[in-house]
Amino acid sequence: LAVGAIVFLMTWLFFYSRGDRLRSAAGAAPEEDLPGASLAEAIRAPALYKLGFGIFTGYVMTIAVLVHLMPILEGDGLKAKPAALVAGLFGLFAMVGKLICGTLVNRWPGHLLAAAMAAVAIPGYLILMAPGQPVLLLAFAVALIGTTGGALLKMSVYLTTRHFGLRSFATIYGFVGGALTISGGLGPLIGGVMFDHFGDYRLVLALGILLAIASMLLMVWLGDYPEARAARGLAKVSA
Image (cartoon, rainbow, N blue to C red; front, side, top):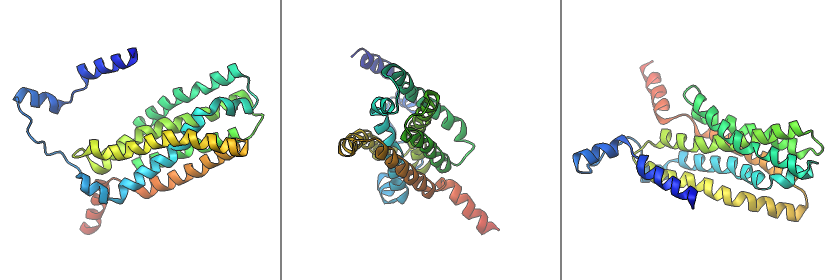
């Protein structure tokens, strides 16, 4: 409740845009002609589904690993205390993943950056699949998977704005954010059911590798931003 109260207070006091301030000053709420796709246009666009499924497949098993991380690490031979310390790296490197994306997203095409960040988790899954690894290597694996989780969360917002603009951003991002929410609920359930059935987390981690590859392919398939594609088409016509 205390955390919720702090979030509510900070949102109430500071969560305003320039457009909100201009509308308040004018005493009215004129319609703003924001650039971007309408909801109907977005629903008809293949990019929405590529982005949504790309985020889902990349994120679902990172959350599964996060929830089941303590038993995974203990199964790899760590005692409870060092396992807890290693597991704590997930959250730290999730923030690192966001910072990496924020730094690189204006230098790399967003779809390729998202694909690369989805791939970062694959070595982490492979390390966790091999029992008896040293603590530092297990910590490195957790750091990689955490980086992917944070990066995909960041890129989901950025890619939505770049592909669909701000005209119907809140509604359109509801679909993409829904993919995150569903993956966050399904991932731990899938991990638990698979462990109960097979008695081993290696198949869970193997599924994480397959889904990370699927996420990479979907992000590459998503393609560049619409304005970048339009500029290339115009250049070809001009040539």
